[in-house]
Image 1 (cartoon, rainbow, N blue to C red):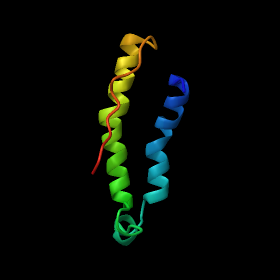
Image 2: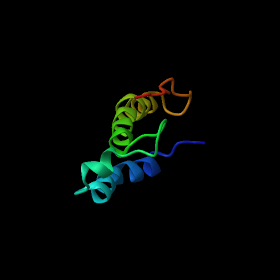
Image 3: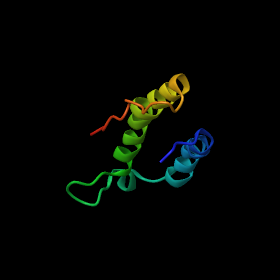
Image 4: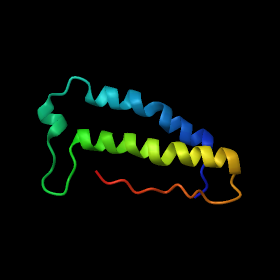
Length: 81
């Protein structure tokens, strides 16, 4: 898949507002509940998104801005919480 900056920005720009709309005002019971062993709750998912942005998206975008699309990005980090 070829990454398209414009399309990526369209999604990334909407993420904070979308999460705010979905999660604002929910009790801790909703935010901390998971589906059982081996599943994540809402708070863990949000933390994962933040870590992914800091350690994957931003370094990959910086690399692409410097190198263009001439070579693949080495910034493919798997994050576990």
